[in-house]
Length: 325
Image (spheres, rainbow, N blue to C red):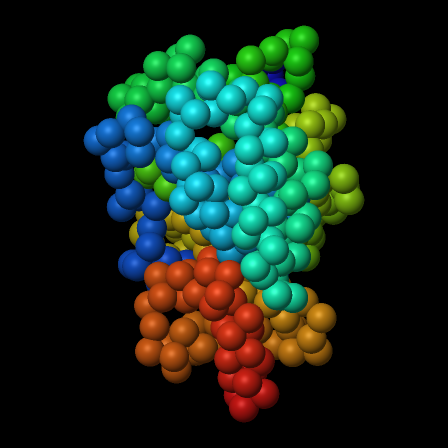
């Protein structure tokens, strides 16, 4: 199984959008993953892990945040609760969601919760139960994560154990907890910085800016498809090559995770204009001009981008800025 994740030898043909280098510098200064650290408590690791279970079905980060907070406040994400309920978790979660749904008017929250209340809750149930068993059986702690990511081979093996979607070769993997979720989970702790999530934002960048064709089947995140595995690692490899190129160009250390985060900021913000003629005008340079004109740091924009109550207003402000500039 290990050969599947070997790094491919790929080139990073540069067709970078205007201002990408400047945005990378800004990310390094303000929000580099290398500055992140592990929590001290194992319970916090579990709490963080459960959030990523909701980054599924191509949801936005704002939608995932909303769902996580809803079920966390309903006391439905504690590890012992999930182990106790097992397959009955979805029923409890659906009941909790229906109460909230009845109070919501038409809007982004109602759409998100309506979609989740169908079969997606059953998928989340399986993910959370298998994750709870993995954490229990492997005694997952901050030290466990640190110890298993000290070099590339150990990190690769851990990623394989959690993510490789082959029930015969890897029967203990966590259902629908693929590369995007798990690598981002590790990056958030300053771990696995030679990797970045092969998210739809990164895949779009690989196809549009690095001019490498992406198969359409890759664009739906966290599918249980073994045949996608090698292609996803090719995308990660291209990000790794780009990080090496940027390290030389900028004369400062740039990790693969930093490149992935830079792309996520740029593409996620650009996606707010998905159906607008203004979308092509949002280059990384325009992105930085918008952040600066708003008097923000990158963390301020990220907070609004991941808040379901703020994201529509952010999109409107962005459209107004681009019209005027």
